[in-house]
Amino acid sequence: MAEHLGSRITAAVVVGEESDIKLSYDIEQVMDRIRQTVDKKLKKKNIDVHWSDQDGDVAVLIRLIRVDEGKQFMRWLIPFSAPAVVIADVDVSIRGAGGGDDFDSINADGRAHFGFFGGSPTQMVGVSADRVATQIAKAMIQSLG
Image (cartoon, rainbow, N blue to C red; front, side):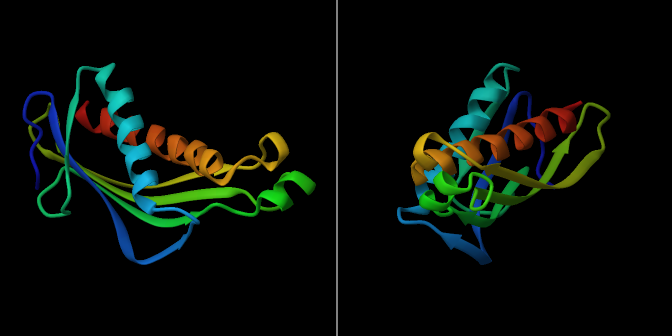
């Protein structure tokens, strides 16, 4: 298991093999948004995250399962009919304060249902990614004890 050294954690965001990605732009923007939000939340607790490009020996592995920008016109017409969605499976394995390996697996789900005139796809997926990242940051903080 990966180890928590002081206040530095290694993490990776990857796209799962069976992922359902429906975006009109690059998935890397969603991955960057998740990284930035997790960093912002954890910096408040003096925790530094080192982001890896590989899913090898990392303390936190975030696998994007589903990313869908939904239909802007349908959100404008019927707000709850076509939400933007980001769903991730997250494995958190951090050596906690007690010395043992703490392992959590969570399914983070972020949805944005309505925005101004249905909300732009980039904004709606961004809000969903922020919600997922907040759940991930909370799980990381809890694992550290």
